[in-house]
Length: 419
Image 1: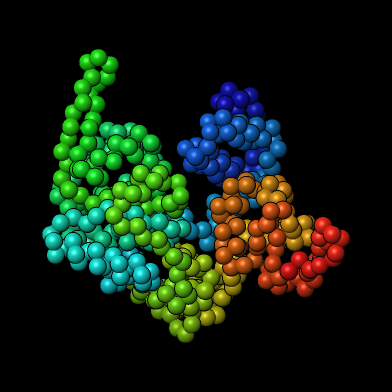
Image 2: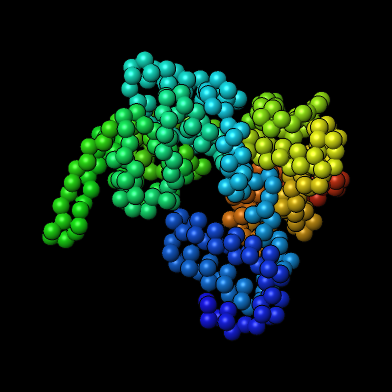
């Protein structure tokens, strides 16, 4: 690839990527998709995707406009995924420290509170805990709260992709003390060999590690001190049955109600020393897609607007104007969501339309639409899935300001409304 770049003039390269910013964003986004999905796809599929990306890039088929469209998914303010380390640091500062400070997830908190008290009475470590649910709902926060409640001062945090081999996990396990907590984010992405290495550690608090190899190799048994493993995943279905069965507690986190998000924003605004009046915070909560991470991110953006364009106080009018600049509407939809609905309604007459056709029309990857855009549109009832493809509902037409709803002709030749 380096030689290929060297054969292109600087002017030609700049023209083909449509500007440095779009080119960098395009490269980062696609590299992330290829690497992030490598563990879930056959090798030949990943190589095919990568070669397709590089071929389009160097052939000049990806213009600046198309690349900018592709980057919309990476730059979304309403994305539930973490944006950068700086944002992570702010979320840490806004996290609740105790179970009593947690808002929402009432059933999960009640069951977890009983488990914590029982473990403290018996003076033994908690059983292993599996937390699953969409991103941004507080799985990492809940893991830290459990650590605080159990008096663990050094919560060990890692992620599935970072544990590439058995020795990576062994180095962590052998340093843990009695009652310590190990938190593994994206536990479904653990390599199979590491996952199987973890089984005896979870059940019997021991691991068998092979030193060297071949005829001179030998197995060494390491005894571990009792600990608690907390695993977090956004895709519980990808966990093997053997792995799921080794967790004593399994909690599923649901999306938050608007009043719960408002209470979270009130606490965050208090920590940020940001005064708010009337229903200003409720309006932010209504646009937060039921996700605390999105709510706190929108609060930061509105705070910036209030400090620059207003008197630093959040009011309903300031919130409306601040979110209008961010192009987040009353349902929490952004440009990418509206572009999806516009393509489905204007080009495909409301559907049904295949996801591949929609991806080609929008200049997006299929995975982006399925994983980033569609879930929320399905959740709020703007899109439905059928065997023939995606269809826009009447609510989507009304939200997009389109009065006419198309009719359809069924297989018997009878005309009927789509909705």
